[in-house]
Length: 74
Image (cartoon, rainbow, N blue to C red; front, side, top):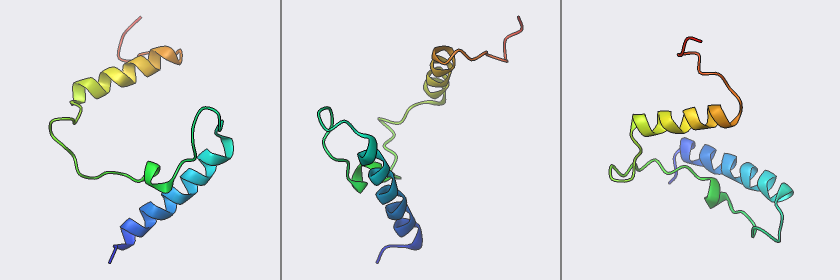
């Protein structure tokens, strides 16, 4: 029997897939399913990203969105 947390994840995934399907372009993407939005809590150490890699991704998004790196003095 699924736990209360599993059911909560499924409810959120149903809502997320409904919203995504309401704005998707059917020519570019088929229908989303709740499974597309279910979290995977099993972390594979081989494919997990290091903290340094995650920081790099955040830094790139910050640059792309025109943000400032407040760690650097200008």
